[in-house]
Length: 452
Image 1 (cartoon, rainbow, N blue to C red):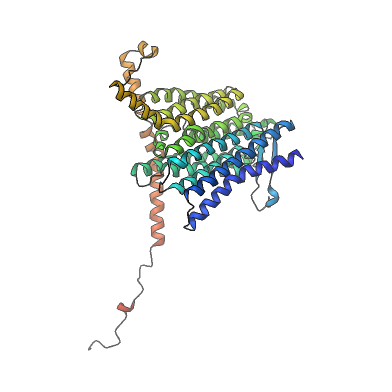
Image 2 (image 1 turned 30 degrees about the horizontal axis):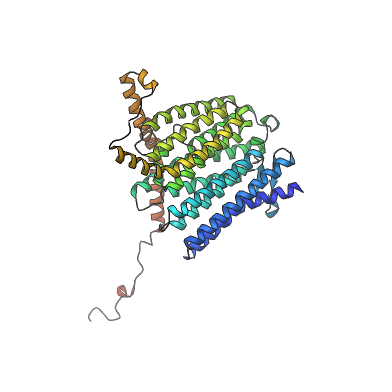
């Protein structure tokens, strides 16, 4: 009986944001967008129902006192011809899913007033509901298909919200850069999924998330390759080095989307995936060392860079990245409980900072007007111990964001752009009408002779 209740509660938590997405998308496709007050009410109901269902599922699972469970909904489709819908639930996955829906509910309430009378109001909530669907699927995924769908939903909604103000050239350009980096992350994720299915003969994530690889038939080499591919996917999604340069460019989106994506949830999705894949990392020491090295390097780089940013959103983004790097180091060190508590606390704290940033700026301008000058910043002990030459070099590296923009332009963005242009030309060539134009009435031969 508890298992049945758990299955239904998880199903409600997953379908609540999906119902919101279908309702808003259907109304928009019919060119009958819902009024703002209706959209706000539907979003509040959807997020509240999803959060309540997932919290209750967490309580039911905790009182049952069992290990991780695989909830299969494949009765709705054939496993041979359809897509298996499996959810792997435990305390970590249910807690993260409930946290995601709760944070999304706070952001949706804030967005209702922040985007009031904005032309893209309904489009924003369509993308927000798509994002919540992706986060819940990612948190509860029981097989690689569900995981990849959730991963794509998060990435697609993220890139589209970066370009939310599509009348601005900078927003469109930065959204394209984010999408390009995400394609590298998605390719690594897809490669890991294909390799797992090929080697293990199944796409069930219980092999990677539910226990050690010793009982799954994965060799040490295969475990290492899959773990490295997952780390590459996480690096692209969570802006770890060398993919960190897209993070400040993603601040072109609305402030609420920046809060939920790059302050609290999306940037932590990679950390959560690594936390879930901890049993796999324990079987791949080389991949584990790689994750720790990337996390430490990212934390140091982001800690330097956040100190020289000229706008509050970019500064907060790099401050978030600093903590993300530390969380990755904690996971690599095997401190899983500390890593999850750090992740949840940091997500809530950054959410508050991003949403209150406009008010903080307003108060700061008021203080500057009152005192007639900017408050002086105190120098730290570390900066006093450095030579001026070293300080200038570190300042240049931080100011140029590690010169990663030019590197990614050559390695990722330029090839992706050339590929997109080639596909555009191919599409134009395929859509060109027949070269021999069809004779119209004006081109038809005259019924009279030439002598006429």
